[in-house]
Length: 506
Image 1 (cartoon, one colour):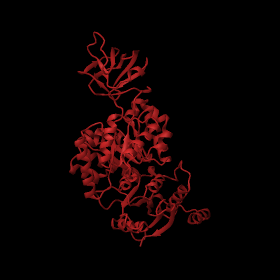
Image 2 (cartoon, one colour):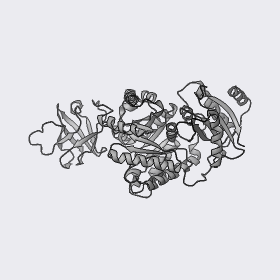
Image 3 (tube, rainbow, N blue to C red):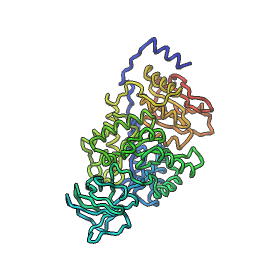
């Protein structure tokens, strides 16, 4: 009924609201950022100490990423526990993301080999016999790769720095010509663009790593080298067989880093919980000049599908060694914010670099300055593939908040669905969400603009909003006289999603 009254009112009267009045106010606590775009920071040797973790959280880290391509379980166990401990001490909602290695193909050599341009070399399947007279054999560490590579297929080593082209293909070895030379080192990564490889996306190592991370109650699992929706369905089945309590399920992040994923993006978006634009391998698998366009397309389609989207790889790469980023890196982060990505990510900068805390601080400043600008504006509701009454309710709340210059949208979201839907519209107002599920609370850490609050399951759900508003007021994020739009999420006490209207803070 309220929605109908509101729509009738809108038809009679047009109210223009100046965008400036709805910008976020500076945070009172200088240690915690008021940005909307979230930051994912990779934890490594450079950032494993409690002191560094505290500083990174205060600087604006929302999600702690653990890269399972590196590190022993003993180290991951220690670091995960530290993140949880420090987060609890600070009262911060920091999610933990376990990034599975996936079917990474690597080179095996006994010694470093110098490859000269236009020279010919032989590449063997692991365990194959070496041709007589070959003093510098190069092996690929996966079986069933060699047989699938045909003449003229490109092979890229170490992020594409070394480029080879197949000139002869046999069952167990290849003859290849060096297009771009360099030094081949043991265990360096290999990319084979466009090849249809007979490799399982979820490897034996991934399954072992998954067992480990599920024991530690992590919030997100990132699946590498996703090809299609079937890969995600398989991962979900594995997780369901290991965890019976649905409330404990981690969300799945699909890493888009190969051509097949671009082709099958629609079915991936249907199955996944979130998307990561993994620009490193994507830029190797495809023409690098297309990556920025693909990035924008993936962000737009993810938002339309209500899937949080992370932009990753080399965002502030120079800060691994330098205290300041390049102008191009600043522009890169700003453009991801302007495109309304949910999060931007630090990799080596925070894991192994000389300035892990400073990298988070710089990224936060770039985000804040960009979000303060007119170029971050959303001038109307974004399109959404979901067509339901829920979308109509949240869209009405979005328009109501804009029209009446509300300071915030407040809601209860037990499953996280309502929070995700409100975040999709990228409102100008603060978004405060009450829940009674710690896992869901942590997963809010990846949703654009969402600030979550946890309440006891023993308390009545209808009391959550009043309690949350009281807490938000104490944090000076709202004050007496401010207007807020209220939403009750679907499935709260068996009821459907409801728009309660506008409330004035007393």
